[in-house]
Amino acid sequence: MDEEYDVIVLGTGLKECILSGLLSVDGLKVLHMDRNDYYGGASTSLNLTQLWKHFRGDDKPPEQLGASREFNVDMIPKFMMANGSLVRILIHTDVTKYLNFKAVDGSFVYNKGKIYKVPATDVEALKSPLMGLFEKRRARKFFIYVQDYEDNDPKSHEGLDLNKVTARELISKYGLEDDTIDFIGHALALHSDDSYLDQPALDFVKRMKLYAESLARFQGGSPYIYPLYGLGELPQAFARLSAVYGGTYMLNKPECKVEFDGDGKVIGVTSEGETAKCKKVVCDPSYLPDKIQKVGKVARAICIMSHPIPDTSDSHSAQVILPQKQLGRKSDMYLFCCSYAHNVAPKGKYIAFVSTEAETDNPESELKPGIDLLGSIDEIFYDTYDRYIPSNNHEDDNCFISASYDPTTHFETTVNDVIQMYSKITGKVLDLSVDLSAASAAEE
Image (spheres, one colour):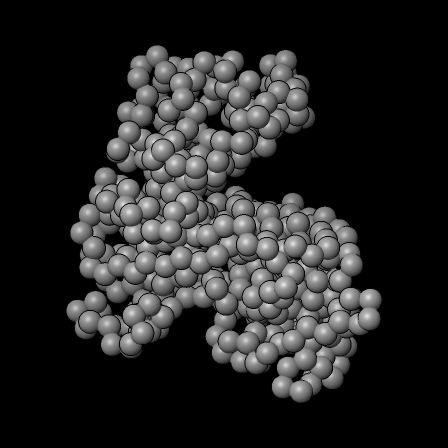
């Protein structure tokens, strides 16, 4: 272990594994260690026995739930946008060959107490019961503008400079109602609060286009895909990738103490009395607790059910977004459902998550609006965890710390963190111009 590495990565969470893979492909010498004896860190995947032990303190789940090994319950469940950055990274690094994806059945939004399919195109806008007749026409015109918008074709801009015009100004040009803005901003553009309305509209329009293009990709009911057997496959796939490029993985390394020189710059990591030297350290917040600050808390419920979420057209996998305004909250709530169709539970069983940014100290009552939409539940586990971001200056100490996972049930924010960290570590911009057809997802 007394070797010198370009980068030592601590923790095998999703973000750390993606970065480890990207850096290895770039030709850097990477050592990747984890204090746990399993992959995934906070974003690991548990079987039923492990789930019971984690939340109930014993390892005897009821037999009627089915075989423990048939459960793969992701602790940080997130769907991937079919044309999104994570899929581009998977293709860029060729990790797709280790994974099998399947399209997600449905994408829904909560409005005035009911669940609706998210309309994403001008055709769907005209059919959607979310809007009245005149609003449908206005929304259709707006969707056509977004679909036709191209950066390099000024004619499609209709005289608007989206780098200057705010999202609010763009939307007001089409006269859309508040409820329509709610589902477009939160369920299509996937903004987690309303601050985007006063930002330049370009990012908002690009997010809507990404959703529509991802939706068109597999002609399914949603723009999302998900790996068979769940996300637990991802860290292991990146570990294999890193090994192919000469990276070294070590699990079950206690302590993992980061060592600094007199100037406060990182010089290595010590575990079990041996020190590996390095120029840079990449890690999750738990490895450098004195270089992080708490910014919030996630509240969530993990549910095992014997049926799909009601009113989601019997979707075996689905996301439902509950925009903050609909609940009188400051942050959105998310429902995630997956099942035996993605091999994450035994036949006939469904796993649902309800998650949100905690605004009170009572997760059970706070999550109630989401849990009430699930119908009958076989088992429920409540959980909260603190959310941290780095407080250090990476230029001073060469430590690159990822932010904790947020409550969203899609990957867009997670991957943005990875891409920004990659640029800070390497000084380069990650090139994600890839042939998207290289990743396919099985249809039913």
